[in-house]
Every structure is written in structure tokens, then in C-alpha cells.
Amino acid sequence: MVLFANILLALAKLVELASGLLTLYKYILLASVVVSWVNADPYNPLVNFIYRATDPILRRIRRHMPDTGMLDLSPLVAFAAIYVLQIIVFDTAYHYLASTSMSIKMGGY
Image (cartoon, rainbow, N blue to C red; front, top):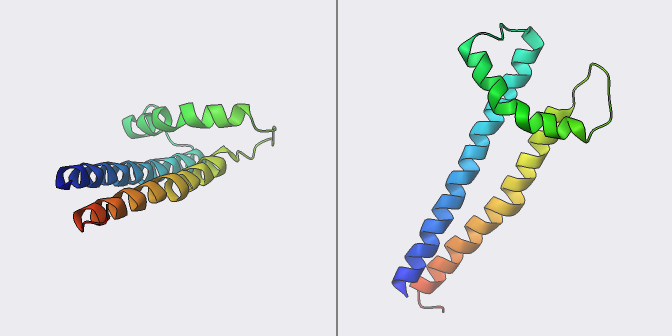
């Protein structure tokens, strides 16, 4: 049973890592918004990376949104989706897996 509890704890840690990667992606998304405001050089390697990392997701979101002219709301939708995913899916999964693991280790199952 301890082995199963450790496997569940490892899965919980993987879920926590995935949530951390989404946090990192939020910072990249924020950098994309700032870069779009200052009209940076698109040939700069850092700007190029930011656009390549965020454009596929933002393009998919823009496809389903109404045209708002010059105002691009797709980063806000992406932020909201990431927050919902982190809070509802990842936090719930982490707490469930971690508590189940501890319960198994304590002999509750």
C-alpha cells in the first residue's frame, strides 16, 4: 500500500509541476501583450520566441471571438482559461491525490 501511496504522491507532484508550467506560460502571455503594445522588432529572437509560443493559442481563441476592431481580448480569455484550468482541474487533482496518498499511508484505506 505504501508503494501505491507513493505513486499517487508522485502523480500529485506531476500535476503540481504542470500547474507551474501554466504559470510560466501566463508570464510569456503577459510578455506577448507588452510586446504588442511597444511594437518591438519582430526579428529579435526573444520577441520571435514569445510570438511563436503564444500565437497558436491566441489565434484559436480569436477565431471564436467577435471582431472588436483594434482591441484584442484573446489574451484575457487565455488568462481566464488558464486560471480556471489551474484552480478547478490541477488544484483539485493535486489535493485529491495528495490527500489520498496520505490517507493510504496512515492506513485509512
